[in-house]
Image (cartoon, rainbow, N blue to C red):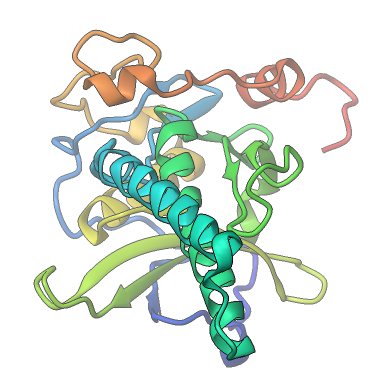
Length: 272
């Protein structure tokens, strides 16, 4: 059994509340997980795939942002036309504000609209029990480098199962019942015990506890330990039953090498 080392307080992020049971603790779910929805995408003797989504209401941000961007663009053109037509003030500070505010406002809205439109329809996580690795179909984005291919796009990553910690985060938000609870997975360097990555797991505590219990059952005991799920798995690349905005979103397409590795057992003599 791997000894679980406590995480340093300074490594906690804003909103951290507590950790869910560690990867080597015997799963004892607080509730029946067989009716969880959506159910796992795929289960076999090698790997388990769980669905994931960073956006709860797909398309809402884009539908709001696009009209705002159109208005903002017109407003920018009007301000700059006025400035170029002799509307400069004798106060240089006012001139700078008049020039920068439209640009800053435009730059603040674009990332949210782009993320809503470009985020894949599913961001699955694969748990390979024979390799003891976890593979994230991770979509990276950056609020500053809006048009950088390096900072935007699907960049799958793989980590050791034993280096994961499930963290419950609570954020107080008026208008959402007072508090929002979600679960994130942090990844630690086993040598330094420092967090090297932190990814979104679920947007709700209920689903986070259920998925984490399912993952631990699978990784510790295998697919036989999992219940027969009430809701059938779905193929997120199939448009049937998806909203129009989901259908417009990019489909899930794992890179060939990581797709093959995440779905197979290690070959004889392979170094893990």
